[in-house]
Image (cartoon, rainbow, N blue to C red; front, top):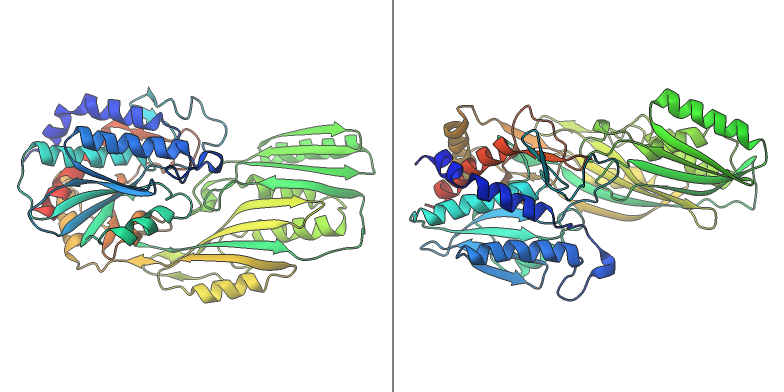
Length: 465
C-alpha cells in the first residue's frame, strides 16, 4: 500500500480542513460555559466541528455531554485501538505576526494557535482514519479517535470519557514528537499562598499589584506591576529603562502621580523546558528586588528571585532529580499574582522523571518559608515497556515511512497517551524541527502534516488489522 500516494490525492482537502479547524478559537472560557459546553462555547464549537466531520465521512460518532467523544471506525471484534486527540488550545499570547486564528499560509506553513498542538495533528489523524476507511481495508479491532476538550487544563474530559467508555487495548496520541515517546514525566501543579503579614511597615516603595502568567504550563510572556514611591519617580523610570535595555526585552514605564506602573514582555514557551522562554514575571521581580519595598511586598518578590530566578531544576527547593529514562526534573513559575490588600500567590509547574518521588517534591514546597502549600495536583509519570507490541509496531511503521530508525524518547510534556494503560505519543514533530507549541507564531509545516498523515494511516491499519 502506498500511503503517501493516498495522502497526496487528498492534499487540498487536508489543508482546507486543517485551516477551517484552526480558525475556531478553542480556549477555555468559563464565562460561556454551559451544560452542553462545559468548557465554553469556543471549545464546544471546535468539538462539534470535528464530530460533524466524522459524521459526514460515515464514521460512528459519540458525544459524551460535551466533555469528550469519539469518532469510530468499526472492526470485527470488540477490541479498540485508541487515537487520542484534543481540540482545546492554550491562550494565544502576544506578539503574533498574523491573526493567531487566521490559519494563514506562509512559506509552506500554516500559522495558528493549535497548528502543532494539537489541532493540526488531529486533522492528520482524522484523514488517516478516513483513508483506511475509504480503501475498504479489513480490520479486526475498532479504531476510535478519542476527542478531549480540556487537555490544556485539568483533563476533566478524559476522566469523564473513561467513566463511560472502555479503555483501548493500546493507542497513540499525535501530540508531541516523532519517532516514539514511550515515557512522559510526572506533572505537578503546586499553588503557594503567601502567609507572612506585617503591620504596615513600609519602605520607600509600596508594592500595590504584581501579575504575570495565565497558566501553570506556560512560561509567562508578560508581566505588570504597580507601586507607590516616595522618592523621585523619574530616577526609578530611568533605572527601569536601563534594566530592560540590558535584558534586551521590551517594557513600559508610566507615572501617575506617586504611582508607577511597569510592564515587561518576555517569551512564552512550554513549561516542560522553561529555559526555552524568557519569564517576564521573574524579570519584573528581579527589577523590583532592587528597590526598597515594603516588607510584605519585598518578601513576596524576594522569594521569586531567590528561589526561581536562575533555577529551573529545583535545586533551591531541594527537589532536583534526574534519571536515565527521562532526564532532569524541571520547574516553571507560571503564575504570579499579588495585591497590597491580599497575600501573594505563586503557581508552579514541575515535570519530574518517571522514577521520581512526588512526596519528596511536596515536602520541598511545604518547607518554603512564608508560604503555605494550598494545592498540589499530581499526574503520575507514564512509561510503556520497550518490548510492547505497540512499540514494535510503530517502530516498523516509522522506519518504513521515513527510512530512519525509530528511537524511543522521553519528554517532559504530558499527552493523552498517559491516560491509556498502553499508550505512547507519536509525532507530529519530526526530528530537527523546532518545537514552537505554546509559542507565538505557532505553525505546522504542510509537508510534515501530510507526511504525518501517511504515517498515521499505516499505523492505524497495522495496529487494527
